[in-house]
Length: 155
Image (tube, rainbow, N blue to C red; front, top):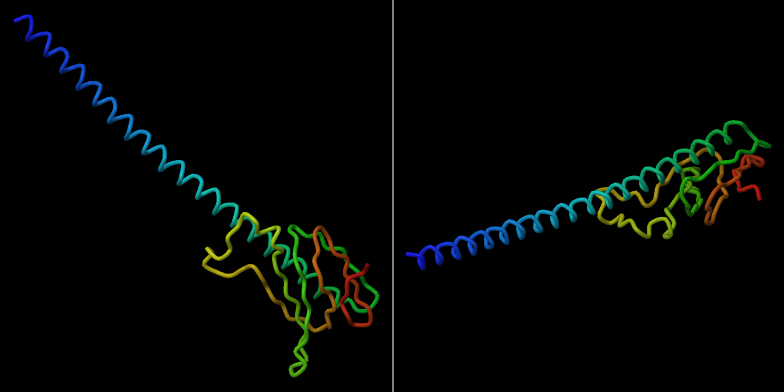
């Protein structure tokens, strides 16, 4: 009888160890899934923040250009940029419309995959009544000037 009790005791210990291992594996699997989800949430939040900062910069710049256009020649305005941008200006001669296009500089998109986004926000265009002659890369700020009806970068 003593042998039977000893065997039963070892079987119970082995069963408890096996159950502990199973619970540990499930806990580690759940932690791994949680960590992956948290990393994805952070990446999406970073992407969303960068897109919002780009849109805010674009809106502020476009508003400043329209305001300078309305104020007339001789006025200037400093615009603080929230993110580095590339500005390209152009003209549609047939319709006599001037436009400006902003693009996020690659340096500000290094950790952001815009292609994953449901909408393409890496560039934004805006039409204006004044001719715009502003081209190039800008990091922190830009000083715009209306010189005889042409909006340009005051250097």
